[in-house]
Amino acid sequence: MAVVKEFTLPDLGEGLTEAEIVRWLVQVGEVVAIDQPVVEVETAKAVVEVPCPYGGVVTARYGAEGESLAVGRPLITVAVGTAVNSDASGAAASADGDGGEGSGNVLVGYGTTAPGARRRRVRPAAGQSPAPAPAPVAVAAAVVATAPVGPVAVISPLVRRIARENRLDLRSLTGSGPDGLILRADVERAVAAATAGTAAAPVATAPAATAGPAADVVGERVPLRGIRGAVAEKLSRSRREIPDATCWVDADATELLAARAAMNAGGGPKVSVLALLARICTAALARYPELNATVDTERNEIVRLPAVHIGFAAQTERGLMVPVVKDAQARTTSGLSAEIGRLTEAARTGRLTPADLTGGTFTLNNYGVFGVDGSTPIINHPEAAMLGVGRIAAKPWVHQGELAVRQVVQLSFTFDHRVCDGGTAGGFLRFVADCVEQPAVLLAAV
Image (cartoon, rainbow, N blue to C red; front, side):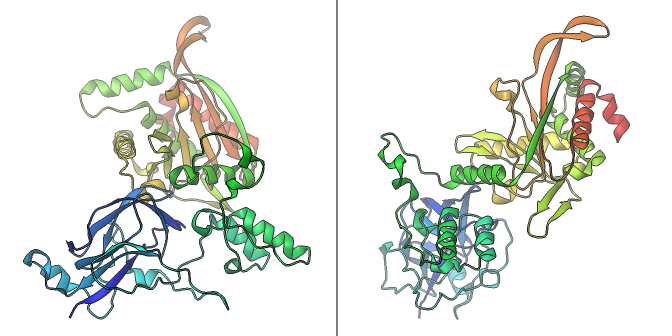
C-alpha cells in the first residue's frame, strides 16, 4: 500500500526564510528517484536545485513558478511504495515507509544531515493557528496535506535581536513584508506601541510600499526580493551598524603589470590582476590581522578570525554577488587565479551555491572594470574591511625623479573603526600600495 509523504521546503541555511520557485523539474504523476532534483528555487543567496529525499510518484506540486514559499511550507507530495516502473521501483522501495525522512540530502552535493534532525518544530502561540498550506498546483491523488509550523519569517537576525531585547513575541505580529515577512519597521512599531502603554495596532498585511507618500508615485515598481532584496538589506544594515571610514592612495601599478606579464609568458594558466591583488591582501592581513575580523555586538567583542576567506564583487545579470575564495591565505597566486575564475564563471551562469557566497572575512572590490577611478565602498556586513580598486590607466607620474607616463591605480580602503584606528588602516593600505608598486616587497613579506 502506498504511503503519501509530504516534502516541505527545507532550511537552506544562513538564516534564509523563503525561496522563489524558478522552475519545476517534475510533473504530477511522474516517477521520481531518491535525491532527484524536483524544483529549482532562487534564494537571497543563489539559484539552487532542491532534491526530494523520497522515491515514488509525485501526487501534488505546491506553488507556481514565480511564487515565493516560506521554509517549512509544502513543495510536493510523493506516494511512496506505489507500483512504478522498474527504473524507479528500487528507489521508491528504499524510501523509509514509516514516515521517516528518506535520504536527508537537502541540496545536491551538500551532504547535509536529515532535515528532521536539523529543523525543530515550533508550536504556535496560544490562540494562534498554523498558517494554511498553499493550494497545490495539481493533484494526482486525494491527499490531505497539513503544513508544519515552521520558523517565524523574519527579514534579518537584527530584527530578532530587537524583539528579544524588548521581550516582544514575534509570533504576536503579522509581518508587512511579502508572505507575512516580519520587517524591522513591524517590530519597532510594536515596541513603540508597548512603550506608550497602548495596545499595538494591527499591522497591515499589505506590502509597506503601498502605504505613505510613495503610494501616489506613478512609475515602474520592482519588488525588492530575492538576491536584489538581500543585497539591499545587507548594505542598509552595514550603514546602520558599522561606523566606517575610508582612506585612499594612488599607486604606480606599472611593475605589477610587468610582473604579471612575466608570470603569464610561460604558457601555463593565466594569472589575473585580481588574483595578484588577492595575494597581496592575504599578505597584508597577515601583517594586520585585526582587520580580518568581525564584531559580536551581543557580547561586545571583536572576533579576530584565523582564516582569510576573500570575497570579490561580481556583477551578474541577477545583480551584485560576492563569491568567496575560501582559505585564501593557503593558496598560491595561480591557485587564487584558478578559484577566482571558477567562481566568476559560476556567477555568470547562475550556478553559485550558497556555500560559494557565504563565510567571507574580507572583500576585494574591483570597480575599475566599470571604468571609474575611485569609490567609497560599503563594507560587506559583518566583515570589518574592504579594499576598492579603480581602473589602471596611463597617467603622468614622477618616476625616479623624472616625469613619465605610468600605469596608475587608485586604491581605497574602507574599514570598521571599531576594530582598529586610522594608523592600522593606513599601514594596511600603504603596504598594499608598496606591493603594487614594487612586487618584490611581497616576496620579503612571506
